[in-house]
Structure formats: C-alpha cells, structure tokens
Length: 431
Image (cartoon, rainbow, N blue to C red; front, side):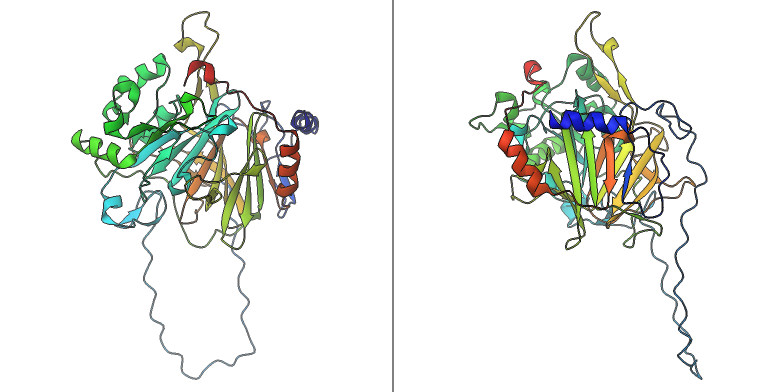
C-alpha cells in the first residue's frame, strides 16, 4: 500500500523536463507511460541524436610563480593510446569489459547469455551473477523482471536459477554473437528461436539439452520446481564445441576510458521502479568505485559469495515495449511483450558517482552489432572499464537519480516488519 501511494503521489507531480541543471540534487521524470512531448521519442525512432556538444573540460590554471627554466628539455611524446571501442579493440581486450581477457580460455570461448530468474523473491539470492561481464535486466511480464547475464571473462561452476526465454532475448543473442541458455519458453517464441539463423547457438531442456549440456536440478525446500534449474556452463561449452558453434566471436558497441568524460552530473543513488512489482536501487560506494544493488528495499547478494551485487557502470535505456497478442490464438488471455532493441532511444550512463544523458543505439541489425551509448553528436559516452548492468525501462518516469543516499537499513527494517509472501505471476505457466 505504501508503495502504491508513493507511486500515485509521484504521478501527481507531473512531468519534469529532460534537461537538468548543472548540479541537481535529484533528476526525476514522472511518466510511466509518457504523453508525446517535444523531447520524447517513445516510438523508438527519435529525432536524436542531435548535436549536443560534450562539456569542455576545465583548464588547469598555469602556475605563474615558478620561473621558466633556462633550458627546457624536449619532452618525449606519449604513445597514442589504442582506442578501446566502440568498433576497434586492442588484441586480447574483451569488448564487454574494456579489460584484457584473464586467460586464453576466456579469449577463445564464445559469449554466453544465461537467462536468470529474479521473481518471486524466493529465487534470490541468485548464483554467480557477479561473475557476468554484462547483465541486462528487463520486464518479463507485469512489472516482473528477469536477467540476461552475459559471461565471457569468468566461467562459474554453476549459474542460476535458470528461467525461460522472452522476445527480448531474440535481439540479444545476435547482438552479442552469443550462445544462449534458457529453461523453456512459450510455443510462439520457441518457434522464433527454432527458425532463426542462430538456432544452433541455443541450449535448453526444451530442445533436449539436459545434464550432458549442464542443466541440472538443485531442489531446495520452499522453492517450486520451476525455480530449481541451474546451469553448469563448462558442460554447455563442451556441447557447443561438439556442435561447432563455440567460436570466439566478439560484439562491438561499448567504448571505455579510465577517466570519466567531463560534464558528468553527480549521481550516487539511482532508483528504478517497474511499476510496483519489482524495483532496484543502486548506490555509489566511494571506497570501491562501484554501484551496489538493493532489490525491493533490501540488499541483493550473490548466493555463491554472499557479496552484494555490484557494477562499475549502470546504464538505463528507454525502449519501446509492444504487446504481441498476435503470437497467440485469438481470444487468448495472455500475450508477450516485445522489447524492441532496434534503432535508438534515450539513455543514462552512471559511472564513478556521476551520470550522463544521451542515447542508446544499434547501428544496424547485423550479428555482433551490440549496444552503443552515445551523445547527441554521435560520440561515445565513455564507460568505466569493468562490469556493466543495463536496466531496460518503458519510460524515464520509472527512474529517479539523486545525490542523496536513501537509508536502506531503515527501509529493510520496515519491509521485514510487514513482509508477506508474494505470488509468482509466471508460476501458473511454469516458465
């Protein structure tokens, strides 16, 4: 009830313009389903990018008190750094992280996407999410989110729990030239997968991939059967090698630089609400230079290490969500949501305690052409080398960016005092 009242209050405040002052205490966009506005491009064919110049770096003043030496040695020019993205990466550097592959095994295996459950709360904490290079989080249905975790640098012994595919995954697999592991899916989406050019890159018990491909059941008291499927990725890679699809292809789009771009706006607390069913909060930790995750008001940890989920970069992208009842028989009471990861849309990028407003873009739909994050002048917004979390939302009204830290200890105490079991909207379909 508290969250519902809060959401209604937020809507009553109206729409806040996209442009932000140079150092706001908070940036908020209150429209879950925004009306057409000059700055809004909810159709996924936005008028931008437009020429939005990057802020000019502040010049360091010259210290005039030091006398000029009589003899000034000729400086040896520094070597020009090799570009790290968006379309060229040094040999041995992972385009998902902007960092060197830790070993030849990582360099020589293919990207692997694993679909991981995030609802109901009983599935948390998940296992080895923190070992993924990139995680996409998007709506499964009804404001419930799932993760599509992309692994390359590190190979966990086990990942999960594994859940079913959605239409959004049919964009991600070719975008990242990836192998794809999922539990199952609806008949129409399975038909799309089976008729795709990348069908042999996909692995699921629904296709006959079982224990010999790494899919195992790990029963646990209090968890329904659909939450007990896990993946041993080493076995999946072995099957992919036998299938001759474990080719070490790369995906292009991210661009990295150690130092953040000039013009970043302070951003230490980011709250994302999928209209009341699931939320996420990321708080910047100065000690580690990372963003730490809370879900539904409490610390979100990794079951493998008990470490809080974290990311070096947090990206939020606004993407068109289309209802697809046409995939099902006429009169069916269910539908699928098509999250259209094509073209471009608005984006935030958070790193090092600051954020940037810009755009996301896929330059084309060719395999390996993945997400770019750019300014209006088409220049890349430089990401921090490391791990990235991409949150996909319907509109920026779902997102609040602040410089003030929410008191998560007090929030967790209040939640636990009134906690009741939450039903799983997908449980009835077993997916």
